Length: 63
Image (cartoon, rainbow, N blue to C red; front, top):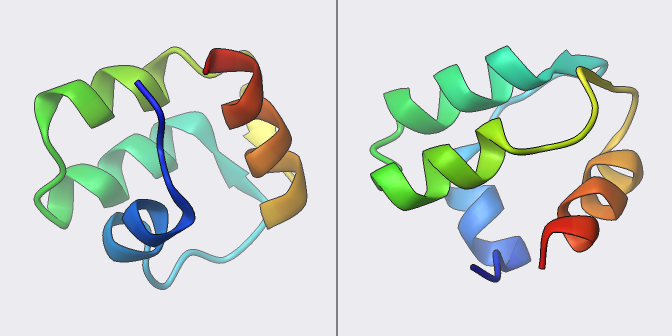
């Protein structure tokens, strides 16, 4: 699954960094993300992300 920046913006709006993988999943779920996107986020390799760039790098490893 390829996740675009627009999708992330839609489902992860209002996040404050640093953020944990669990918080990413929770926020996306609260904002109506699909099961597929939630599973994608749960597969992220890191437990914590210090900034959006670090999150984007992690997402790129899953593509």
